[in-house]
Image (tube, rainbow, N blue to C red; front, side, top):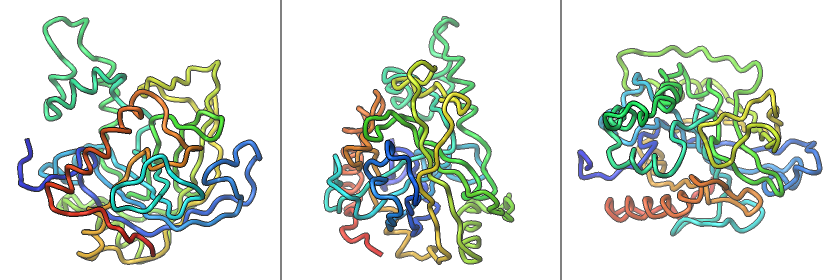
Length: 310
């Protein structure tokens, strides 16, 4: 099914960058929220962040196309043993996010129908001749998810979409640009890699930052675990900042670092027990992500980097 001999990731195939970042836990955190990465207020972690386009096909990866955009955070030396560790990898805590608060597929059966022919989104929406079986709601959600590009990867708010644990709590997490952060980039209609190039220019000019936040499930509200098409409304449960992500000024645009980025493995189950993924999609991801990563690296004759320290 691939258009080249190279096997890319099954989703978020195009990486714009992998950048070094500090993940700084806030100095004050409500005691009931001190779990996992956040167990020690004021703790500072080194991390990698991978920014990406959502599409699975590298041949249609022009940044001007409507798509999801991803932000995946890999925290180094977490305080404990994760539920999964990638082959040839060191333990990390990964937080995977995209720039939409919802997914456009509500259950595993629909997801299987989509991935069977991922290039045929219209066929997934309008399946068969019976209008009552058409996935009209999913069509509007797909339109909300597959949006025109931002002018900068530092501009959107990113969301976990699916739910996780934070100790005893059910939560979703999110990263949003720090208040007052200015974005002066513009979209280059002629450059298929303008998001990559804009980010390099922005980080050569100075640092950037995001607030990392969690949103607690309120059981009596419409905040479902098993259906990621339902948005958890901030009016029902506001996001609570727990950490600040600081991306220092740096140069990431080298062949060596982009190759390193391509071979990194990110997965929701690279997670401490206190950040356990929950819900039907995360249960499937527990098995799909390592299998997909192993296949990709075996086919490409590459390995997940053993040394990711900086």
